[in-house]
Image (cartoon, rainbow, N blue to C red; front, side, top):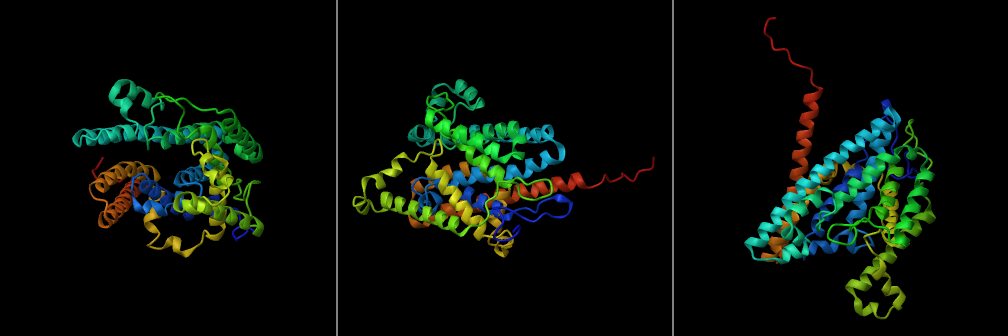
Length: 397
């Protein structure tokens, strides 16, 4: 039943005026995903052993994309129902513009940060590892290709994916009213991408690191989970709790953990397992969203969405607030995290002992929370300023 453990993931009861209450679970887990992205981008960060990529066959990127689709289904689906396709699509394109500007600014800042560090420390390995060597060879061409999203150094490939997914979303918005058709088309594109090797080219050769044809399926699933009918009722595509489905999801996650454990942490035991079992990991690519990665994030989402109720008191606790704040200010937190993670790398290369490990991770989390707080504070002030009536000057006419 709606609003209970039987509700579809993310479902909340409608409130007065037809507006849905904010699902704090999405904000919280988006904040966790952003924190994990920061941690995983720092080489030799021991805290990285505890992030999602070491627990199952997916990582924080899958969570980020799924939750982006979920938020898009809520926000732009509601705009579609209220104002129609053109207005909703215009809102999506406005968001695309914001993301594009953020990506270019981040590209310039990250390139300057890495380039200066490489020159000052005589460490060209930074340029090579982060795939910025092409910028040093042809800086003007590299800038042009970056503007066209065809030059994507390491760590700067998530926002281009998000931009393209939103552009696609603006076109297919009306199809969210026909979820099975939209899901079917998305599955066809996903299958064609993987079977035919479809990809978008990059300037430096090869395809995009995150192939939009594969990743769009996860985004579309998030959209369809988030969208609601005009009366607030869940759409035809819902995932009510079933004990057998929960058992299968849990079994899959246990299998994935066992596979990772044997392959990475106990290769001696892995040698005793059948070759087909230990060889599974070699084909689990991230670029085009391998089915194992897709199943892993969906199984995890199914369990979390039903085991963590939207009304959970701890979501409103002080301990959850830092991650809620980061999740609600995802774009500035993500961009800052890319820059902070490189600073963390430099610190750990200087000293990677326990105290420095603790300091880097604590300072990184505190910095991300500070960015989230400042962004939220400023947006709150802007909303209050726009909502307040004009104050008369008090001077006689």
